[in-house]
Image (tube, rainbow, N blue to C red; front, side, top):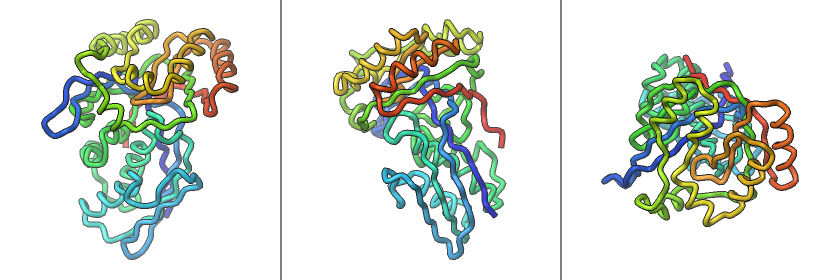
Length: 288
């Protein structure tokens, strides 16, 4: 038996960091939505309880450093499963990019093993388990559009944004989320109006969503990597209706409502940036 799962990337329509918690994590408030750029996960049974993970990407570790591997370990332990699994990752989402590729892979493994091992746990249970793996995993279990609070594990579903194009551009650098949070001065940083973004989604207003995009971490990353600001400026000049860095970066996304504009933005970045993607918004939730 083989189980196939898609692991879509996410973008942050808004990201606010409220304060540092006593457990060392930061209290966040993030409005996130999924886009149609996805890794593909193939799961098949292995005997003897062994977990084996492979990928054609040289950037993907094949041990506990990989969140997908840790997701399989957690499922075995939590549900006392004696079977093993072979996991093949087809990587399409850039690594260390602010798009939750690793977290989405882990979430896809949780969903896939729930089927492969006939566990039949609810999606809410899988999301609770995901919180033990990483801050974005709970959201990625559900997908769709949501506001995530706490350290990312408290998920409140939101309406999907209106259909639009999303252009993603990642410069040839990687960013450590931990180092960006360490350098963040919460008092001096800009903070989004999360409620205004939530209200815009409920109204289904593309213009209001574009007006509210904001990321508290962006100022930290752009100081270290000015390429992020350069990409933003190119996207604006080419006619993007909203431009923002996703997560801790360095990927920048543009929201575009018109077909004619999206090709102009995509082409303007192709020679400037090594990884550029033109995708659609997904925004709808997993149901199983």
